[in-house]
Amino acid sequence: MNAINLLKSVTLALALGLTASVAAAPPKPSPEGFDHYMVLMAAGTLDLSVSEPAPGVTGCNGLFCDGEYFQRVIMGRDDAELALFTEDAKDFFAARFGIDVDDPTLAGRISFGLFMTNPDWQYRMYTSSDTRTPSTGWPVRDGGYVLMVMDPEGVELGGEFEGSVAAAGSVMFYGNYNILIGKGRATEELVMLFKSSRPAQIQPDGSVALLCELEHEDWGSGFAAVSVANVPLAGNLVQGVGRNVLTFPRYPGAH
Image 1: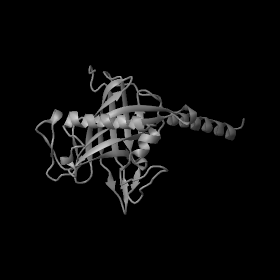
Image 2: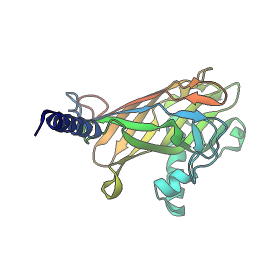
Image 3: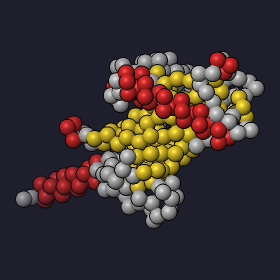
Image 4: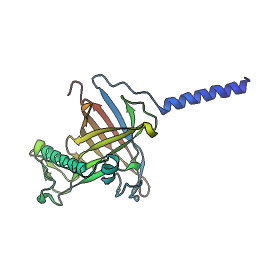
């Protein structure tokens, strides 16, 4: 083998090795005291003029889209399963925040409905203690129910927040993460339930910080700290800026 061919062989080998390491970085050890952890980020560009960014995904207005596609297609829920999920969500909001979403006196003071995150936000899992993760990450699909306070005077809370008032722009969530891991026939879905620990206040610039409890059928209870600080660009474009750290358990020694 001459020098040129040798150089080509070495370069190719290095390139293949680098590609392999980038394409499938090994799992990261969990921090001491934790069984599982993940880092999710979003850095896609949203076009506010696009209401249907992907086939079947409709009703998008910035970060959130209509949630029917998420429930029916991604989670695969039929009418009965979706009805049960809806009742669970209503029970959660009533128990934690003392809000009965069907209370006629709250009509116009709150909004309540299904949502899914806009796929153009490019929400992805980049680090995990449980799976090899490529540099491009694994797609994170999430959706469920969002409850938002619309009344300028706020809404008085009950449940675990008896005596508190949720200001206009406060949001509370109940839903699922569905992370698509792998490619082709080797894909699997990592599904978790999330539910707001407390009301989160959307700031005037649209940013928001969320604290959520997590549930996984095998890992038990966990915790997620989410921040969204999207940046307006020219025209109808918005640069996505999302960060989310998830751990199981919530803290060392928790059950």
